[in-house]
Structure formats: structure tokens, C-alpha cells
Image (tube, rainbow, N blue to C red; front, top):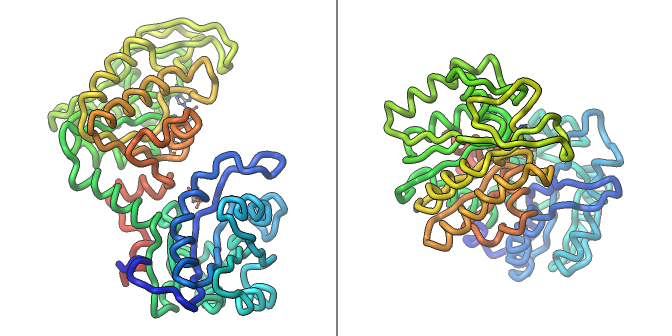
Length: 395
Ligand SMILES: Nc1ncnc2c1ncn2[C@@H]1O[C@H](COP(=O)(O)OP(=O)(O)OP(=O)(O)O)[C@@H](O)[C@H]1O
Ligand SMILES: O=C(O)[C@H](O)COP(=O)(O)O
């Protein structure tokens, strides 16, 4: 796969697929701009070469065409500030307006196209739509790792219409870091899995059992394991249909000599509410009417020790309902342990939408080795799937 370092963009228009699918609040302010900041080096390289930049992205999942709340125009001011340059905006991603603005774009200038998903042809991977988009630029750059698991018009199909197609710095760094964890992990290798559902993470857990020394399972998904082992989990989150699967994972871990660690204790609450009554309970013994919303202090200690002694750490999914302050301690404790391991020389990769957001909002983002901009894309890569956006650049 060629990268942007293999190309001189002087006098060229780079059509860059970025993943600017960023969270916006009710006033259309960006609440986490990690994905925007990540794209800056790619944009600077092209502008410094003497080229022009045309950015295309999706935002959210619009269903029936244009919708105000999904317009990329809300990003323009933020982008201009982040890139230290005015950013022009085309109110459509194809058609006359986009063509005219793209044609008149001078070297050193940046143009942002309107949300690609305002056309259903984008997600359908429509050839004619991809061809229209491709006419806007001379060189195709894919820097949208977060969307590389989608075989859409702008992420995969479009590549066929270009002689020159390369990956940007985000895509390259994401793939290099994920590969480092999957293929060259220094041992002890510890994976920390958390979040709400086992069903979302089952494939990656199975794959990791062949590679890791320690598998820590916390967060909402851990209660399905306790129930599978015959424990009482009260009203904690459970996936009844995954009980057998949880049992077989425990068995697999044993057979593969993987140290599978579940939280010994939990912070339990009598309601799903930050102000609920709370107590600490052993995890096989949570009373009816109570639910586990965070790992407990003992579990935090055990997990931290394992993490701090590791040389490679992969973390996906929070240890509790970290959005509520009273149930965020477990996630903070684990984040601190990951930071400590990193300071001791470990390589740490944080992935997944909520875990990456947790690490960034808690202020640990620059204290770990790498925070992925990918959610589903990183998981699919870790499951061993070939991402369509990556394959398209390799053809
Ligand atoms: N004990 C729990 N009970 C209920 N919900 C929980 C519990 N622990 C964590 N959660 C919730 O799980 C959610 C995150 O789960 P999720 O599986 O989406 O993780 P993630 O890091 O976003 O990974 P990905 O982006 O790959 O899906 C958070 O909103 C958190 O509040
Ligand atoms: O946020 C993401 O994970 C990516 O931008 C992909 O978005 P999607 O799940 O709507 O395709």
C-alpha cells in the first residue's frame, strides 16, 4: 500500500476521505475533536507540498437525504481554527457547486464537501456516485480508518477511478499500531475488555485467547460470566442467550493457559442513577434489586497489578458506567494502571468509541502509547477481517 509520503502533491488536488464523524452537542459544538486533530498532519503534508485539499466525510447516519443536524457545515469554523486556515464549504458533495468550487481551488487551499451520506448511493457503494466524487480530485487519499470497515462509495469503490491512491498518516499509524499489538506483542500481553455487551466483542475475545497471557473482563459484560458460573447477579446487566458462550470462553481460556480475570467485587447500586444508594459486593453474590455498575476496589487492585506488570496492553470498553461520576472509579483506576505500564515501557493501545472517549476526557490520552480513532473498524481489524477501505488501496 502506498502512503502519502510516496507522493509529491505539488499542483495537485488531493481528494481525502476523512472520518469527521464527531460528536456534536445540541448547539452543534464539537464535544470531542480527536478525529479532526488526528487528520492535521496529512493535510499539512499536502499543503506544504504545494497541493490543494478537498475533504470528504460522513457525519452520523442520515436516513432520507439532507438533515440539518448532520450537516458538515457545523464543522467549518472548528476546522478553520484547527488547521489555521480558512476552510471553504461546498453545500453538496457532488453536482455543480462542488465541481465549481473544486475546480477553482488554488494550491494551499482547503475545501470541505457536504455529508456524503446525504446520498444513499454512498452507503450502497454506488459506482456512478463514486465516479462523480472521483472527478473532484487528482489523487485519492484515504485517511478514514474509523470508516475503513465500510465498503462504501467514498471509502472503497472510488479507489478504482484513480491512478494514484494512497493512505494518509492516520490510516498508516492505525494499521501499524494495531499490527504491532496483533502480530508483534511483547509479553506479558494483557487485553482488557469492558463495556456493555459480550455479543459485540465475542469474535475479538476468541481471537485474543490465542495471543494474550492475561484477559481482564470488566464492565457490564462481566455479569454474564458470573451468572454462567452460577453466581447471583441481582439486576445487573446480563445477556441470557450468551450464558453458554460465556462458559465456553472460560473453558477455552483454561485450555489455552490464559489467565482470565473477572472482577472479584463490584460497586452496586439500587438504581441506574448516579445518586442511587451504593454498596460494595462480592460478584457472585449481588442481591435482588441491586445492580453492579462499576468494578469494586479489590478488583481494581488485582487488575492494576496485572496491567502494570505487562509489556503490551490492549484496552477496549470501560470498567463501569463511567459517564456517571460515582461509577467511574474503576475505569479511572484501570486507566492509571495503563499509564503506569506505559511509563514502565509497555506499549498500550486504547480502542473503541467509549474507551477512547473515556481516556481522552479523563486526560490520559497523551500518556498511553496510542488511542485509536476507530471503534468498529479497530474491532473488525483485530478480529482478523480485511477492511474494505484498506483492500481498496492495496489493489
Ligand atoms: N456495569 C455496567 N452496567 C451497565 N452498563 C455498563 C456497565 N459497565 C459499562 N457499561 C456501559 O457500557 C458502555 C460502553 O460499552 P461499549 O461496549 O459500547 O464500549 P466501547 O468502548 O464504546 O467499545 P466500542 O466502541 O468498540 O463498542 C458505556 O456506555 C458504559 O456506561
Ligand atoms: O464512528 C464510527 O465508528 C465511524 O465513523 C463509522 O460510522 P458508522 O458506524 O455509522 O459507519
